[in-house]
Image (cartoon, rainbow, N blue to C red; front, side):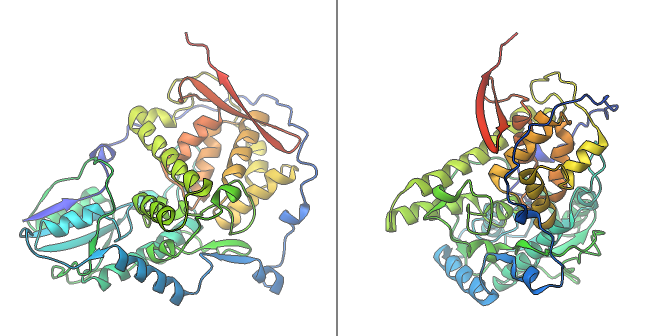
Length: 448
């Protein structure tokens, strides 16, 4: 007997109900705020791809060589590992479906599958729908940089599973077709793990084997096999995907002072791409923060890291509460607003050609590296919807294309929030950008 396990709540497996596509809305004129004129043009100055100076501006995140990354990751694994015991283990084969939980450390579905069965079969489905186009405006659902990050994550997951006596079965196709076939081949019944309460990190056994006999485990796909054009980071930050890279990133001491920074690899934790792919567990971050506070000191930085994790969870609970309305033009509360879908205005924003240095620098960083600072995201969102009057969904879908750390809950939750489509305690949090600063105003909404 096999058990099909997933760490994703069963609610997320339901088929989405997609609303009708909207007709184009007539553009309306909006005055662009006269600001950001003093931003340094150096941020946007193009450099030849082959020049030494261009190469020198690339910062790998994390900024360690591969041997050091593996060393730190292995030390962390040892700290969160336990000696395997077969006491209480069940029989048969458990199939573990990996989705956005591409890690071994603190993977509860993997641990429960190992605990309840004789053998574990980890599976990843390369779903072609993830590499199609967005629903409303036809942007690529997965840009080249996030596709490469995913490839890194899969290669690292496969390596870490092999180290612990397993492997990763990789199949191309729709999970709803592949998984029942595998379940039938291995005599499985399906049992999807639902929501669970927050607990401490799972102590992963050093050995998870043996795996079942599989003729062809499949290979990690190349960027070309995914149908995505190759794109290399030419300047800025180049993120390395995978669990080992995530575990080697250490940034606790001065997070509070740097969390709103906008340039370079050393502001903010940069955990978000690995959290989005599931290469890093939020419970692991929580536990490491508490360990840091105990061994060294609690400070504003450790407080704010945990605060941001709670904000991340808020958007997940929000998506569970409101469902598909999070993607609708009026947001969860069906606010009526006549947005423009002016193509030229949108493309000037998308391509970093608005003429406002701070906006353009942030948008070019996004398309070049797949990352943008938290403060930058708030500012470019405000500019698009408040100053240009452009449909917020166009911005949200473009972020879906480009962001390494894209996940639907945080992305669409933040965009509805920034666009003033309220869902937080009856208030809208708007960002009025004036003279290079982002002013925050809480606007109380009148209830009908």
